[in-house]
Structures are given as C-alpha cells and as structure tokens.
Length: 303
Picture (cartoon, helix red, strand yellow):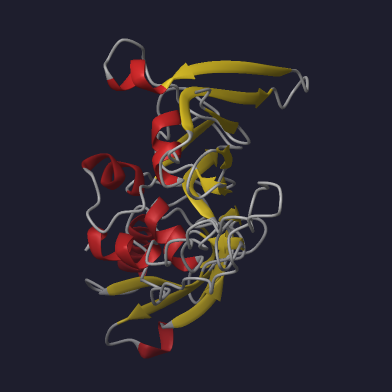
C-alpha cells in the first residue's frame, strides 16, 4: 500500500534534457521546460483512530444504540467540554476518541442505562493541524486525522510537483522529534521501487503544529567542451563525473582537467575546485560531490 502511494506521489515526468546552445551563442544555462504538475488522489477522510486526542473545535458524533434520543452531534467547546443529554458538561479535551467513548459509556451506565452501547467518531477535525509548504500541488494547513503519517500528508497535499527534489524538512514547533531534534530532513527518492529508508521516512508520524516543507530541486551548470552543455538537476548524490555524463560526455576536444566554480551562499565567496577525470576514473582521486549552483567547466585540450 505504501509503495503504491509513493509511486502516485512521484509519478511526475522527469525533466527534459538540457538543450544545448546554438553554435554561435555562448554556452549558457538552459532552464528546464515547464511541466504539467503531477497529482495524487487525496484519500477520503478516515475515521479517527483510537489514539487521536480530541480538542476544542472538533465535532464529535455520539451514537447510543437502542437509545436514538441520546445520539448527538456535538462540538468540543473552548473549555474542552461537550454538552450532552442527562450528563450536562462532559470534559473531553485531551482524551483519545476511545477514552471519550469509555467515559460517556461509564457515565451513562452509572446512573441511567444498563450496559449502554456507545460509539464515538470524529465528524470534523478542527483542533489539530500541520502545515505543508513548498513544492507540493496543494500546500496549506491540513487537519490531523488520527495517526497522520508523512505519506498521508503528502498525499492530501496532492503529491510533489515536478520541481520537487524529494527532500522534505519536518520542523516540530511543539516538543521535539525522536532524537531530540527540532527539525530533520528526509529524502524521498524519485523511484518506482521505494527503498526501505523511503518506507521508514514516509511512516514518520506527525504532530500538531508541525511544518513540512518540500524542497525544490537544486541545479548545476555544465559548460565548455561537453556535448550537451546546460543546466542539470541534482538527483541523489550527483558528482562531477555524473554531471559530465548527464551533459553527454566530453567532446573530441574536451580535456580531462575540469574546474568546479563554487559560490558560498552565505558569504558569496567563490572557490575553484580542480578535478582530473582520468584520475577519478582510475581510482587515484575521489570523485567530487556537487552542491547547488556549482558550475562545471570543461576546457579544450591543448594539442
């Protein structure tokens, strides 16, 4: 089930290859063509699971079988109570749906009914929310419904846009995440065969006040003596040799001596990294991972 939902989230078509510049024009970065956004069918509103904690604004449906006059649709007030026949004001805020059901059952059984059969459901979720922003098709404030996982939220948000990188930041405003962090970044790979780590990430439970940000793709530019100079998205851990390969490899005049121009986004300082493709391929030197906005320049060989 999770794998099927992941495929729906990531079924956006891959960006077209970068278009090389005309022969008489300088090699400049080419922006990817516009793409139609991918959509994922949002699930129907589920019944709240037993661990959903009721809060002010939630609308509850209380059914007492065999006693329809006691069945009601009630709203949790700002003081955390509901008004219920025979019982008056009943404090329910902070209780799970299952606990509310037991409380009403016990109160009715104590003074009014013999073995009442009570069912409580959440009709409208209005007390707990998370926000999803960034590269999703339907960003905004979404209600929590029971145990809401990351994949539930992304599906309700219509899935990723084609411009999404698959990197997602979860920021917790109330409390901390599992290992004491206030935020974490997870990566959802753009694959029809999700990895075990994808499945673990998508099962991450969300809490009230969480802010989920789907990050956009990052790009690098490859210019000089390559067959398809242009702008390419960083997918997974893109390296210099991978970027040169995406650009169609070296031309017949291309040199194995490559320079990477990197600008520090904080200071604006520019550094130049030199990479020898031959030494990397022969295992003598490590390949260089790329970061957003790197410019890879392949020079012409000197004969």
